[in-house]
Length: 89
Image (cartoon, rainbow, N blue to C red; front, top):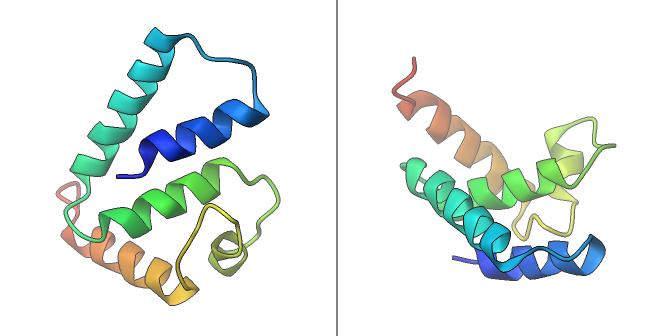
């Protein structure tokens, strides 16, 4: 999983995180990652792109974010599979 790389990238652009906060953030990201039944990497990329972008008006624009490392079609497939398989429905 790429969570440590993302946290390092976030750290470069923000205030320094204490090590206990960094560990809490990594555990939180791992819990989210584990909660996705399918296409975990695509959904985590989408989540990273979504949380780092305040201007995107569509999923296509989100897929252009540098944190989303896949093609936009992977994003649609991941959302579609997560939506259908969601235990909350």
